[in-house]
Length: 267
Figure 1: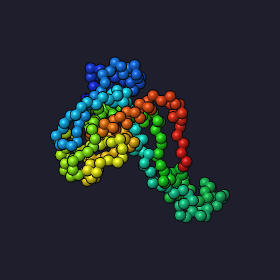
Figure 2: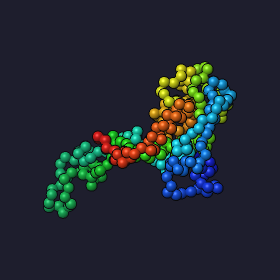
Figure 3: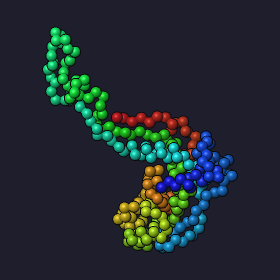
Figure 4: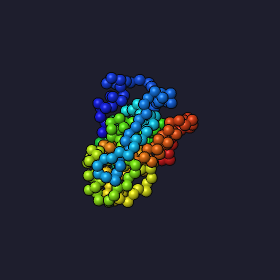
């Protein structure tokens, strides 16, 4: 969940929010003047927390100034691309009746009409009404998606809601062990575990399967909506390096113009 107090600390100076035109991601020159981000490397083999080292995080990915507007764009995009509207109205050709002309064209002094199912009539067809199924899918610009991930990761780290573990190996497949571990670490009511591969260990897969508020995800499925939906995001050390390498590659690529073309799809 977004915490306004912590968010103002990372977006502002002395508690005051800054709204300027600076880039959302730190450039190489700006990153030199910032202390590198670092987090404890935690364990999963015991319920009590234990630290086995420190993991250095790249400022361009985990220390960027958050763009709340782009985060909101990502959330709206993810909500709408899977939404299909089934609202449906009938046209004048689909409404029952209205086959004959209601009265002669001339001679009665009335306005001319050809059918009582015209959109002008009560009980007639609907002109330009919704037709189902209607998709609300659209493709968010590529770099808006990249900056959305960077902003969300930076927000989670600044709020102390992002943790790094060595791996996801736990000693038992009992769901109670995983619940006790989450409670002891104070990771909140919902946790998202992210690993670099989609082939996870047997114990944590069985444990998380029976717990609704704990979910597993590979790095290629990491998205803004899922990270904000969960209170805490837990990444393995391999997942951190994988996410960093992918996002840094996209932040520094030189074929940006080719990726900014409008997305087209076949209806």
